[in-house]
Image 1 (cartoon, rainbow, N blue to C red):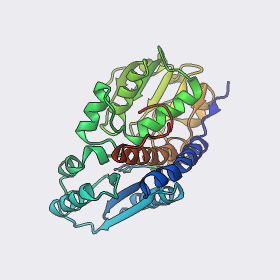
Image 2 (cartoon, rainbow, N blue to C red):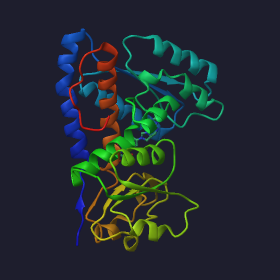
Image 3 (cartoon, protein in one colour):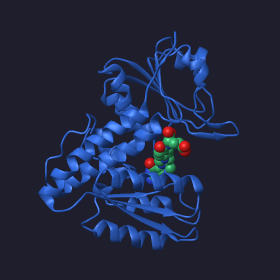
Image 4 (spheres, rainbow, N blue to C red):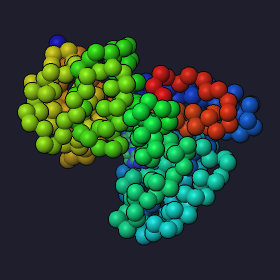
Length: 293
Ligand SMILES: Nc1nc(=O)c2c([nH]1)NC[C@@H]1CN(c3ccc(C(=O)N[C@@H](CCC(=O)O)C(=O)O)cc3)C=[N+]21
């Protein structure tokens, strides 16, 4: 069997086009565009690339992108003051502080300072709590994109067995919450999990988000399973996911590639969250831009 490749780039392009199609009505109703502020501290080249592509995608969707680039030695107080300004700015609907932050910055204090109703990353504990309890809020972009890709394969996920490899606050934990909300039976595996291959072999859905290149082997995968590879590992041979792609292709039913899978959906979901935030803040009805809230 050869797996179907899930074209994240194409799904992301259509999601972005759908959002771009809704922005003119928002503009007409409110007299302004949805606005996203991105804060980048330091010169990490990979972060700079992400921030640039976020800015480009935001403008292409007809939204306002404001970038704040701060030197690598920026202190916590300076960042907190910037976040306070952005919280108070009525033209800003979404605030994204690019992670990781330099060591001297208290990253937790910065994330806590972001207004939860502008937290389009969904990283604030208030939004984590909203997700865990089924209240409307903001869902982190990467897991949200993963659920959209899974639904493009399965329609309903109800009753499926899912394993999430990784328990980070940014991907693993919110991914598990979203899959529970979709009525999957969810196992969260991590570095201390015993017999990881057996856990994965039992799963209809595998979401790999651990950051270990090609960790998941072909013979760990249940034949026909759907594999979502969140890993973006830079190796000498280029970008590699957390799944051994060549091996998995021979066993899985469907699989996301790296690059061109989850990554582009992350950016599209950021635009989606920004559009939804703008609509909520202005009290105008948001057009449906995919199912998960
Ligand atoms: N506050 C915050 N929010 C984030 O969402 C956030 C962050 N910090 N810090 C860094 C990570 C990483 N991230 C990616 C987004 C898009 C791609 C993406 O589009 N990747 C392409 C290209 C990969 C490449 O060539 O580098 C792909 O997978 O096809 C990757 C990674 C968002 N992050």
